[in-house]
Length: 248
Ligand code: ADP
Image (cartoon, rainbow, N blue to C red):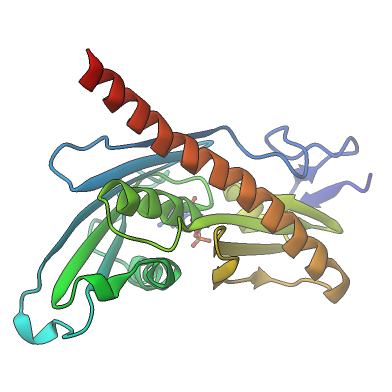
């Protein structure tokens, strides 16, 4: 195995282990739960390793100011924010350029799945708060937001599932941590709707030789399907718990 080093950091060792001990196709430990906030219409928490993201959905509700409402559909509004304590050095609380851009990216990844035409003149607010960041916060946010939308009972074509794949030298890797995101050769966040096969987000930072591109995409789809299973489990476990509560 070719060792990949950057800035004196071993990103891939001779046994094919990554900086946190994972194999190239291994996810970090995943934890997902829905319905965790009582005041929101829908909510979810998603943890992938040290990355922890909370999502809350409010709506559909009347749009104010009214002139911003759309006569034939609801508006999906997304706010992605990082808590000041989510990164090593305190993040200034006001929304950064990156947070504004990621709010747009996440909204555009979710929008194709939501049946907005069912709720004309309304707004659906999605708030995503990064509690702890260690790479992959945009994909964790999409996973959490789509679960929170489902938890709120918003009709969708299907859940939106997201994952980042990337490259360390000539090795494809999945679910990049912060070090891999910063020092790896490429980072490719992808979101798709497993029930329809539509890709709703595709970005890339870094460089990717053409012959590795298809492999990356293939690995991404396999990994997305694994993440989708975790999302379905999270929804199912809320349903089973509430059923138990009703029975007792
Ligand atoms: P993503 O979190 O979707 O991978 P980026 O590629 O922009 O998005 O960020 C990669 C990682 O960089 C984040 O997950 C986080 O760990 C780190 N990061 C982002 N913003 C900051 C910040 N203001 N301070 C310290 N680390 C940050």
